[in-house]
Amino acid sequence: MNQTVMDWPEGLDGNSFSGVARLANVSPRGARAAEILDHHRLLDCLAAYQPEVVGTLPLAIDTPDSDIDILCNAPELMVFSEFSDRAFGHFDGYRLHKRPATSHVAAALVVRFECDGLPVEIFATDCPTRSQYGFVHMLVEARILFVMGGEFASQVRALKQDGTKTEPAFAKLLGLSGDPYIEMAELVSLSPPQLCQRLGVGGN
Image (cartoon, rainbow, N blue to C red):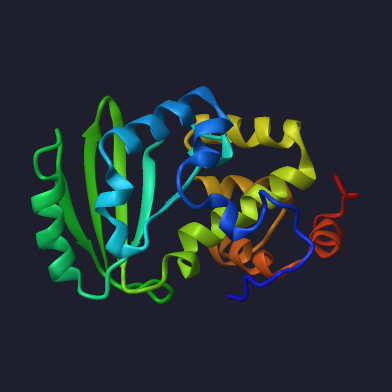
């Protein structure tokens, strides 16, 4: 998936999502999540695995049940599993399971635990984090929210509150056909004018 797209303003390129700065300023719940990540040095702990915070919290379209989602690049899943047990096994609710490979995503380890009252989920697979669907989807969704505006974001939150997953919620509102996870990812290569044209709206 080609993510090298010029003309997107600062805040809508991949580099703008690294670390917790964006998360800390996007919403009160995002600020709380950033505080937890900093206090427990979770990203520092994961530094060897190219961690990226993704999901709905950095976009301020989270619900009360949303996790702090972290992607990792783990070439050797068994090594990551042993590391995870040592690093996070003391947190409440710690559990780990292997997710089998699918037609689009390699086998992965999914780690879950509670950290100061917020759920954390780490998704680790043998793929650079910025090429993983979780990061690509977040980047596309940030751009769509920028183009479509606040009312669209409210509609996404409403669907999510009713139990719809994030990518299907976007796809439903945008009238995208086919697999919503694939359709959303394919939008990452579009420039601002191209995305506006694809969505049938004027630039924001």
